[in-house]
Amino acid sequence: MENPKIRFKGFTKDWEQRKLGDVFKEYSEKNHTELSALTIIQGGGTVKREESDRNLMYDTSNLSNYKMVRKDDFIVHLRSFEGGLEKSSLDGIISPAYHTFHSDMADSRFYYPYFRSYEFIKHKLVSHVYGIRDGRSIDIDGMKTIEIPYTSIEEQRKIGDYLDCLDHLITLHQRKCDQTKNLKKYMLQKMFPQNGAKIPEIRFDGYTYDWEQRKFSDVFTGLQNNTLSRSELNYESGTVKNVHYGDVLIKFGDYIDVSKEELPFINDDSKVEKFKGSFLHNGDIVIADTAEDETVGKCTEIQGVDDIKLISGLHTIPCRPKEEYGAKFLGYYMNSSAYHAQLIPLMQGIKVTSISKSALQDTNMIIPKSVDEQTIIGEYFSNLDHLITLHQRKCDELKKMKKYMLQNMFI
Image 1 (cartoon, rainbow, N blue to C red):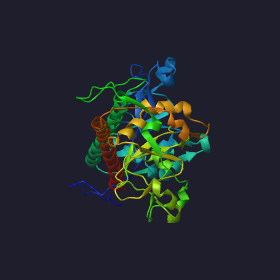
Image 2: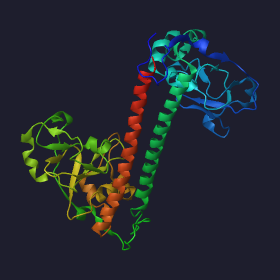
Image 3: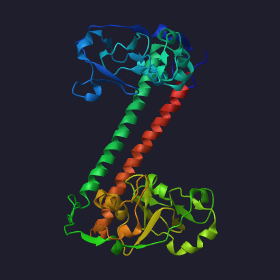
Image 4: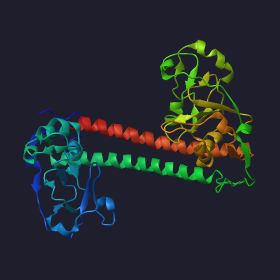
């Protein structure tokens, strides 16, 4: 049989095809009530059941009938073929509805991604499934006849070590990403005054005076937006770009550097003429006035305009500050709960929720007097966003690498 495209140095022996039942032996050991009962999570291994957890309640009177499973052994349920085989995360006992498999000649880290792969489930396992729809079940004896790739235990362990390393790095960067997101959420609550307060709970050194409360209408002057649909935009060519409300809600963060972000062009330049007085500048705010939930009012602050011609689009409320504010401050402040919470009672609609320009006018904004303090706050949150993006990008790159290596390190 063919060998994989990528192999570690020192391994040259041809891979084989062996029957699953020859590599992994089914076992059924009961009367191990001293072990913890486990719940199987597809794609997540096993966890201990807790009697106090209503979502994991089970009959404790018949544990002697539960099957023992060892850490790293494989588990399969008659009905779980779409998830493939699961690997136990720890020693314990499981429902007798499951089948357990162990091997002294295989590294489970090597086989786990294979047993959960599309190739195994849809091309090999599916032929040993009978019944229809929700009544489908696996023919376990038939499953044991499936031919699976096999190489030496040494090569399996080498590949298993490599996959473990990738998984560790993915987990590390995802954890750092999540921690930084949580830090940002916490600091957004602490660095902007809440519930009528005039100073934030956490503040940079050197700033002690009260923040000022202003009406939205005192801070901003309104700009014109267009009503062009997605079909009237393109990503290939044009002279004027467009900010669409859907991108504000989903794609853009608290601010957008338009010199780096991919934005659509307006197809027909003749439709741009009447909006010349509303071309967006650095520091302008674009608010999404419609959504399917309470994200209505989410905004993005415009940065990096330079010579780019840009107009605010469909279902947006574009606003220009009447005076200079620190870069990115308004974007972060207006998306924080300190400001956004007061928009919720102003929202209208059931399936689709919206907020009007007039409703925004009397909302209150509380802002530090010093542009320097505004700027340092904007920079702080921008740095957090940079770290979040950095870790998420690294995590995504590692996932792509793992996917590529799984495609090329297996047959």
